[in-house]
Image 1: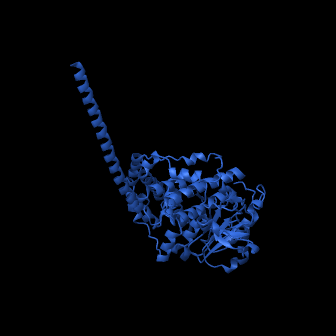
Image 2: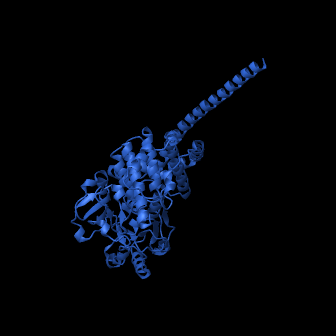
Image 3: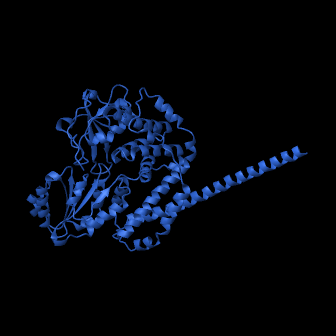
Length: 489
């Protein structure tokens, strides 16, 4: 009898525990479903406010801080929403990726901590992200009211196309600060106001300036907008008398500027009409001392924001949520590229991915990028992006997967302008897009040729052209190239 009672009791307890577990899981699923719906609603509201703010002139510094907080919370929310959609895929490794990696004829050892990125995990704190976004959105009431009183930017249809297709992405606060300087800031005593914009290579300094200079108010307020480099600032003294009205001068510094030459330049600017201004574009922090106002620092985009940009470029008009496996690969690639690669490389890779939304192809690109980094670390001891900045050769054999021979690129110096200057004898060499080499390595020309890593789709069609010598492995691996010496920042 006692045995029967014990058995019945055990069965009842087991069923009760099972019922509690089922109710817990069903309740949790329902709760997460509500959280996802709420997150989508908040993201729509946040994006609406951010886009509206991008279309108005904001001069209030407090509003700019609020806009920055809202944008950061919005990009975190979009990342969490995307990561949640492929969370179940994290339980198993990417078998296809493993197969692609193992099929490579030669593997290089992982060095300098690259493995830390290869096993990215996606723990999604949905509740935390939701609460953070709710708090920010709830505090936006005053911001929205004040935003309604800000003047609206006027854009013609072509300007709007430029705005979206030329990838002036993010930088919401930096755009407003630069506009405020150009349109409203004045310097005492007739001296020109000078604003330094400082950031690493290819973080979007020139793009930011170009975007602001295209603004209708800016172009109408200045009689001339001049673009100079550090070597040509003295020439303005010879032609200053020919300039009339307010002048906006953009000076791009690729090295330390001579103090005497800078003083002469500022003296010439001071003799021009009151209200003339100077924008300095530089990657060197010591350029801060040349400014008369607080500089604008451009850093690498945060991971969540960079991932949003990368997926926007890679998927184009396709909804990433409909392709969770591809979205996961895009996030993996964003982790690889966010801090170590330039926006030029980002555009190149995303452009190739957008043309072939194949799971196997995207997995192949992920594997190629990792092998490309590992090979250059193994051969030269540095990340390929650092090698490019120093104009040191890089090996792209793994990236392009050329079957016949090694393929090495000698980067040209694009510091002075995004339109890379090539020597006269190289200007007539065959030219191939790196994008096309990625898809079909067999199109490689015989002998020396130029490779175009990226070119813009809009005027002035700026391009980044590099040299590929025939039999590039013959170049000594340790031979320093012109421009190798790095300047202290």
